[in-house]
Length: 116
Image (cartoon, rainbow, N blue to C red; front, top):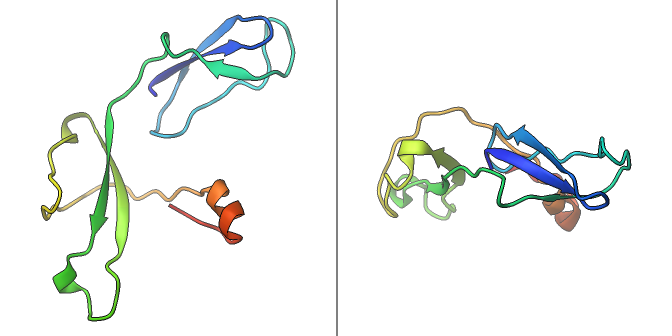
């Protein structure tokens, strides 16, 4: 998402736009200013604007990993002109800012903190 619009489920009024800065994170209103109720909101899919992105899974090359150890992996999100630049199996070099994200659903499932 790039710009999000939400519809109040009680009065059906549309709120927005809400600018979404990072991929995968969206602001959802908690109270409608028209009917003044803390209600649920549904994303208005036709008015909202979407951004194109791609998820890449990076993995250590098997030759650089000691015998008996599993190669480590990291997920990378790319946008704009970097989409479809890398093919599966290619060796690439990535420069960027590392951000970890806390996944509460995985924490509840596994019983200990999980970070992506």
